Image 1 (cartoon, rainbow, N blue to C red):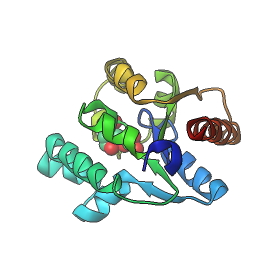
Image 2: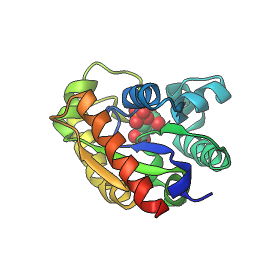
Image 3: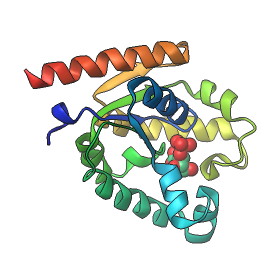
Image 4: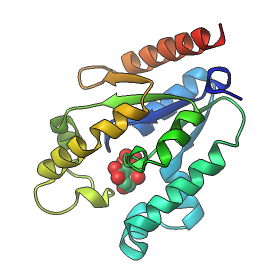
Length: 181
Ligand code: S3P
């Protein structure tokens, strides 16, 4: 089944860009099943993401992400996928994400992420000194991977959640419609 006919929505973007909360909102509004890959990995491993990073290392986590995507592309049905901020960075994951559905990149400025995640302790990659510097560097490194994977790019800093959801629903519908003709 091609992506034009399956109609899944895949949300990508930096940590704190709103993928998980937008996934919940979209799944409710579109009546689609929600799949959050970080949560699926945590459930399968029986550990939090922080524990996986600390005990098994980032590479093991990345391998878990790829193995999960390989399983998810086999699933049928109308779904909204919210994936980890680093998922598009591994080259092997990019075609899998595209196969999964219409990929929407929730793009943000580093300062927005910094403000949102100031108190957050659940993202191992942003702990320690100079979190804003880390956000800037990682975001710059990842931008080309996000852009390569995305079918749709939304600059969400100044948008309300409802505006983002409306935009996605209208753009994804149009993408799908065009694809079927
Ligand atoms: C990561 C993002 C996290 C999680 C892990 C690594 C990243 O997901 O997968 O901490 O490399 O950007 P969120 O984007 O949902 O925070």
